[in-house]
Image (cartoon, rainbow, N blue to C red; front, top):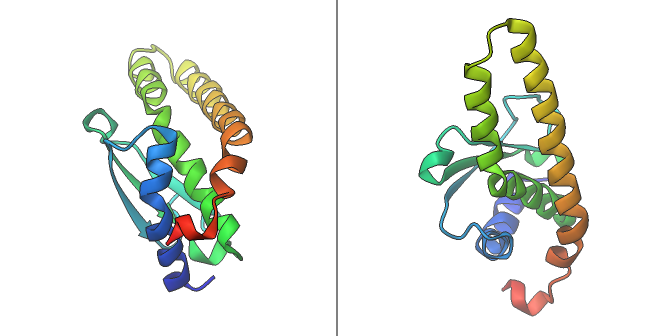
Length: 138
């Protein structure tokens, strides 16, 4: 998708979606372009300042073909923000493990748990967040 079209979709929906998932008090910035984690990723979120209620979402416009895709990615990344306290817990635990193998195992288990939680929340919420009357989007 064209970056300007993705920006319009995000700007039209970000505040509403933040309210809907329960993070209206967060300061969330959105960047556009390839993701650091993978050039083929649709989106990612940086939660390094989560303890200050700040997050930075990156959306890769070139990995989206329609509005629904952009909203799905935005919801997915916002749900990572919702469960940011779990990430902070895992980061703290990793700092206190004694071996590299244990740290790596904790990272694998945490990534799986976080993604499965986000996917479960998406299954329950995303369809409701997408189906908004067009008049409400203006």
